[in-house]
Image (cartoon, rainbow, N blue to C red; front, top):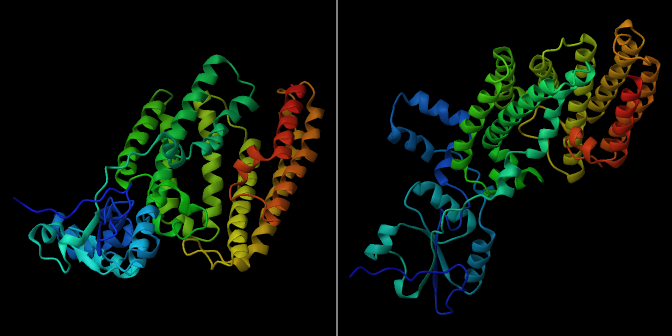
Length: 436
């Protein structure tokens, strides 16, 4: 009868007599899949190496992944298992990892954590291990983790759906609030939300290494190991198919705009976000595309005033976002970001550009109010002048809060959470309704 190493229940402390602790690397110590970690450690380099090798097949891919440069220090290790391993080490026990693939990566992880080595399940079964099997406790492979609803909500960035309410703006500003128009706007909202969630998952996969070194982004579901990488890979095409179905219910032109949004988002994740100021223009364009799509979905003519105003507004907000990210790094004493082409010393320039773009937005709005374009839409257009001081107040407050390091890195979500900002936005809506 085949002998088995003594099993270990993670809920029970190690036997006091155990002088050796063996831990399953995948499913035990690591809250992720080593194959996926190797693949997404540097996706661009992996594809380049695979293509340069001129070989095909899983064996060639496995060989490339075995040489991947994984950041072992920031992998999502199970804190409970790590604590038990450290407690065992404090009692003088030797610690080995069990890994049946990617031996080099497993050995590097063992060395990084100060463990004594790596064995395979075959080694355990055959007894060819460098320790006495009679004194072994094992932390074995756990059941597959299933991400809960909260984890998925976090990973899909449901809170970011607030940005997609921009698709309603054309209908509101054109006063097209019929049930049919609102139905198409809701479909547009659904399409952009599904498309954006898929893009967020893809972005998080590509940014795994950088996110794990970030003070707050390391808590994202994929970076923390709360959501399996394989689950995210399955969800991305499903979300994009949902977006496609919703778009086809609107119009082919809307689908084209959504496709442009997705292509630009992918280009942003892969390349553009690493280009100084190109990322700012791209973000402003992505926000404005939501408004363009909303106009197409509802079937209204997009006002050039709204388009220009939007570009200046979102350029300012994108700059404030970068300012907040850099100022956070400065306050934490961190180095310049490795995945952005900005330096902490750029803060003053970014702040000046954000303020200038905000004031340009207010100027464009003032010119719109004084133009003849408002007469057909508002019976009391003079009331719209009351929006100007409110816009000045909100932009000024956003800039001040960012300067004081009191704003999270997304000013649009800040507007939904900040009390004075909510009051200012509510006042703007009331003034617009009263002016109709």
